[in-house]
Image (cartoon, rainbow, N blue to C red; front, side):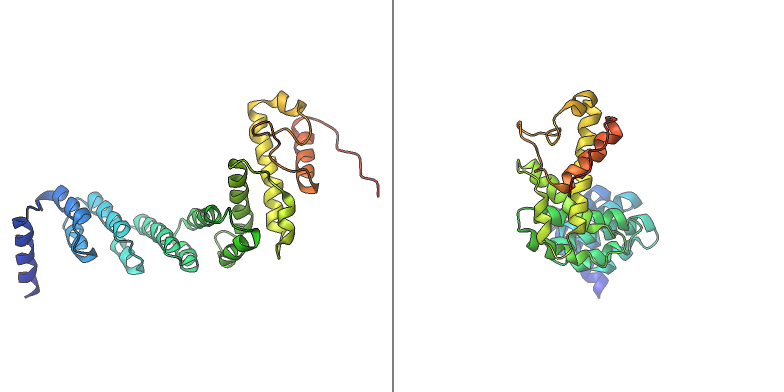
Length: 252
């Protein structure tokens, strides 16, 4: 009875002008059908070419914003594609507001580190304009992410790069109000080192000769406020790459 119903349904589609002949027709129908995921899945499963069939399946999962783990069992005979499927599933779960579920999904793949990093990046970009304390609350959902134990450092690095990219000044004192400021301070320190290294590769002599605290500028303005963290990072960089002596110890 079910097979007969499917056959009548397929005839009906043909009568409405759908071309279901060949892989291209099936793939096209899967992506344009407004009848729901099950009809799209029906078409994808009948694509003959294995690679095209896999592409079709991933495309309809994205199109219908599927959030079910079992959808990735479609690739049970191909571990790489199954992992790719879960990578994309994690991103959809994040978009749906389930960050904890997204992190857990990343942990199930062989791409667990890059998958988790994508989540960290996306959350940092979503919250870069939010108050530090509010952003920190979102960061806490990564506390159990085994694949990215440095989630805090990665998170604040992305945020601060975005802040600088929008013409704002990096202020290390923003870390002070956090319950656990260490990851934030670590991000500031290494971001300053990275920016100096990027500038130094392009203009090594000019970068070493530039004024302390103004070796990286945007619109003729230094991109960070001087403070203990940024100064320690810059002193470390100039000793290593410019051959300058360490600063004299500060008097108590």
